[in-house]
Image: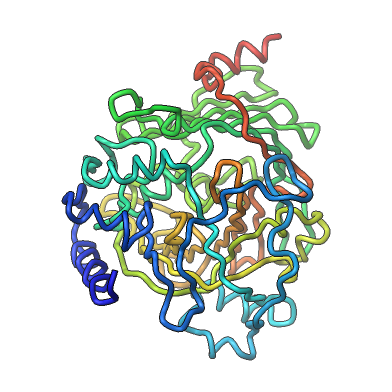
Length: 450
C-alpha cells in the first residue's frame, strides 16, 4: 500500500473512533488485509526510518534450546541493546514513553531503566485465525452499545477497528491455543521492598472460539474458560476458582469458588471489575489481570489513535529467567526485560455515567501485530496517575502465537507491586481440549468431595 493510502485508512478509522461502536466493514476495505495490512490488521510496512521493520510473517517454526513446556526460554539471546533509556535521558524519548513508564523512571532512578533492542515483528497466528479474521471483517458486529458481539468466531473480530471498544474486543479474543495448562505464582511487592508469596497455582485455560472448524453458528459465544487450583501456601492449598467469559453481556462472566474452610462451592459474582484480587492477596484488581480481564461494560472506550512506542516485547528471556534474576525489590530486573519500538493502538477508558470503578480512567496501549495490551496507565478520581501496568509478552511458535500472562501492576502512590501470574521457574503447555463440563462449579464440587 502506498503511504498516502495507509494514512487515509487510518484517518477514516480514527474519524469513526470518536463515536460509539461501528462494526463490519465493506468487502472492498477488507481486501486490504491481503496486501496493505497484515491478516489481523497491522500495517504490513515498516516505518520511515527503519526502526520498525516490515512484517514478513512472524515466527512460526519451533525454536531450539531450553523450553519451559511450550515456551522457548530465550530468543535473540545474542543481541545487545541498541540504547538505554534512563531518567537522565528520558526527555530524548518522551514521545515513545507512556506516562506510567516515565513515572517509574522518575520513581526508581537508580534501578529502573529500559534496555531497547532491535525490533522484531515476531507476531504470528494460525492460518485459521487469518482466514477467520478476513471473514470477521465483514460479518462481525457489536451489540448492546458495543459490549456484546455477534456474527464472528475463530480469529480477530475487528481487524480494521472503527472504535475503541472494538480494539478491546480484539484483545479479549486474542489468539490463543484452544487449550493450555500452566503453573504460576502471584507475588506481592511490599512498600519496604520485600516480596511475599500470595499464592502458587495450577491452571487450565480453554478458548472455545479457537476450536477446530468453529463458526459463528457453532460457537456458543464463550471465549474463555478456566479452572485453577491453589497449591501454596499450605493454608490456601486446595482452593479453586472457575470462570467462564462470554461475548454476550447478559452472561458476560460466570464464576464459582471453592473455599477450603467452608468445604463448599459457591457462585462468585464479585470476581470481576475492581474487586480486589484474592488470588494476589488483594494487591491488584481482578480486571488488571493480564492487562485487562473481564467485561468491558463499565467504561466508555475512546480510540485515541495509533503511535510508535517503546514496549516490552519478545520477553521469552525474562520468562525463562530464575525468580531471583527476574525481579528486584520494586520492579522487574531491567537487565532481563526486553523493550522494542512498535506501533500501538492507544485507547482511553473512562467510567460510564451511572457506573463506578476504583480506577475511573485508564489508558491502554496495544501492540498492532498481536492485539496484546503492553502498558496501562491508571488514574484516580482526581486525575492523578495512580497505577501503572506492564505486561511481558512471549513467543510460542508451536501455536503460533504471542502470549501474555505475567503482568506487573505498580501502585505508584503506595510504593507497592503486584506480580500477577509469574511464570519464572514454572511451565506452560498446549494440551488437548477438555470436556467443557470440567469448567463448572459442579465439577469442582464433585472433585472436592473425593
